[in-house]
Amino acid sequence: MSARCRVLHVIDSLDLGGAQVVLWNLLRYADRERYEPEAACMHGRGVFWERLAATGVPVHSLSPHRLVPLYVPALARLILTRHYDIIHCHLLAANLIAKPLAALLGVPVRINHDHCNDKPVDRRSWVVAADRWTNRFSTHICAVSESTRRFLVTEEGVEESRVTTVHNGIDVALFQPRPEQRAEARKRWALPDSAFVIAGIGRLIYQKNFALFLEVAAGVLKRHPHAFFVLAGTGEDEASLRAQTQRLGIAERVRFLGYVGEMTALYPALDLLLLTSRYEGLPITILEAMATGIPIVASQLDGVAEVLRDGEDSALVTEGDGDGFVTHVGELIQQPGLSRRYADAALTKVRAQHSAEGMTRAVEAVYARCLQREAPRVR
Image 1 (cartoon, rainbow, N blue to C red):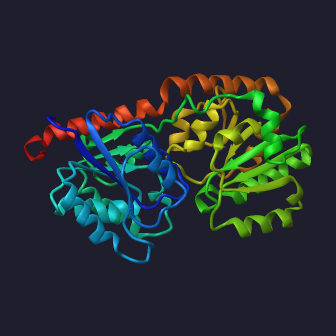
Image 2: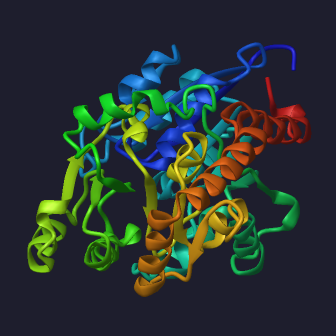
């Protein structure tokens, strides 16, 4: 490449989510000698806008609102004036709109980043068909888990040579165990000093199944009344989840923290991460907990089970098994040595295998292969 290649990342929104964290890290760790990255969200700004802007790359909002379809002409104008070599799409709307438009306007390389194994269980029946259709416009697809890659190949008919598994990574220098900050963190979040604090982290939506999280909380509290639960995140299910804590009689032992911008300030206050999701790709929250020395009890799902090993560095439970979650959480409350063993093993693994820099280099290796194949069309 005789000049830096221009890369435009397009994402549905910059609201709370793991895909937004991945994008942020791809911008932070981009090889600026070889690539000139930019980012665009389909509408609005969102909580990640300032983080992306702080990386020094241009950040564009294509429309003021999701229901105002200015994103099509705005994106077309960007592509025609900026002459991107690569369009890298994240999440459904970007794939449905940006990829076909980029192909139509002659962008040589179109990358799709498949962040989640949601398509087989998505309640919208058209999603799989739409995803299969947009895949024809992908030069290459980055799948965040091996199970996601297999689904794309076996169920959606994508050629194996066009899909690469790139596991998510995090900033392992930023996310570290900080036990010395425990008291300060407990005070900041108004959490009881002597409680065993169990966290659920993520958007309060159907996928994350926080209704089951609260059922598990009720079961744990019957056996371990000194436990305390926090939910960090916002979403459409918040009102129903708050009402559920009242019905279960556990409202005094559950705290809703809302959106937490500084996750590094929260993790020192926690004793355990509980993930009860119905489906996932490879959750960023899992990697952050591993890196901060927080033991994990999680649904045994696809990408989660590719990174964690039940009984070695975590406790993995069949998705939806409330009694199993209660049992394993109770074991870690009662056995501090087991919690520490899981946390230490997970910490070693995430540092060795899941850094944000390593993830970015893997994505850029995909770029390089695609650009080499498309060399006659790249400026």
